Image (cartoon, rainbow, N blue to C red; front, top):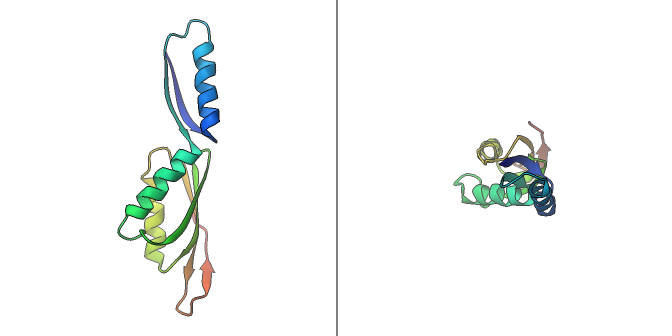
Length: 115
């Protein structure tokens, strides 16, 4: 049996890795725990939308090999912090790069990054 784990950039890469592993002589079974970045983005976005603090906020989620990038603007630091926490809780996320900007009281943006 071969077990595949980790993150891949696309669903096509996931399928190809599974096919290659299955084609190796002597391999009778392939168990895949690969996570494609688009699937991870969907899971993160869903969790952020369902969260009481982050739901309804303007948060763009992008992933690259399991690293989640959060971009957009939110009203408060606590929303920004909760977005990181929620994202870290999604299985398959290896790291979070939070580039969410905080709107100040005048509606201007203050951009800070955290990892």
